[in-house]
Image (cartoon, rainbow, N blue to C red; front, side, top):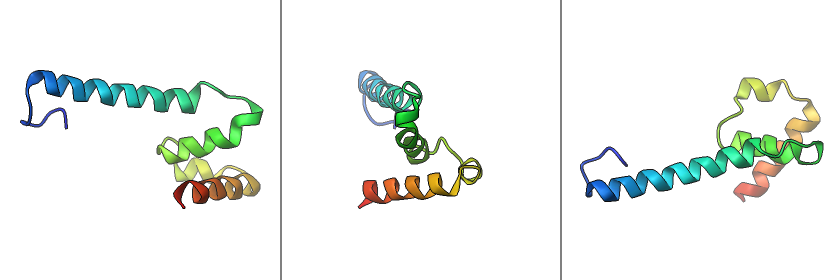
Length: 77
């Protein structure tokens, strides 16, 4: 953790920098490629990174929900 007492200021900075890089990649994966051909994958990534709530998920069609659940199952197993 960045705010903990462990490590020097420089080590904390490096941890923060890595965290920001990872977060930036997640945002890019989830929001930079909105096309019809990538919609299911993008919705899956939004769910995976907890950026699509259960309530929002329930508004999707049953077919889309099933496909995203299948993608989640593939990713987890």
